[in-house]
Image (cartoon, rainbow, N blue to C red; front, side):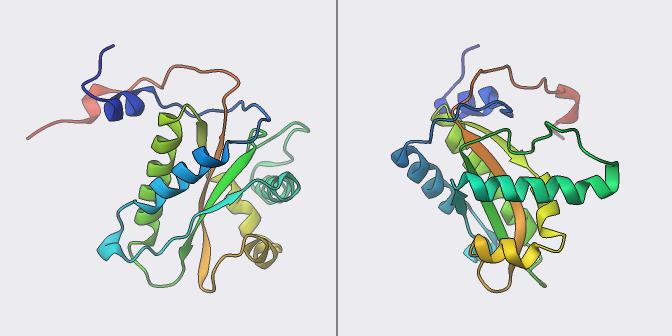
Length: 182
């Protein structure tokens, strides 16, 4: 398929990657992804979010295990090989300002999408991971918030696992009946 520009090509080719190489992301690529995230629009440019890239695998394993443990209270015991970060070498956490900030969740979603598209444009796989929220719902909420250096008054918003993909796959099919012009 031919695309009108590189942005549209990236949007159409992006997929949720669930199989990563263990290779660490090049520092210039990671910096470019983080800088793109910082350029995300937010309500009145108040930027009630922060962007934290975590490459510490022991910490990521700990967050993953706590997420699965807390999630299991809803669905039962996860399988032995359950994973939420898919062994990605980096996970980006986006905490948001807690309290009465109406736009924080929406702005968080905008940052997440910007990061995903920036990563995809560099052929870096990515998947938005909502399940890591369960690590911040349990007894270790404050512990993980401190470990990730969330600013005072901020709480978990979303996370994105990123890394070089083991394999590429086609993007999900879209339904043209879900968009229209009046």
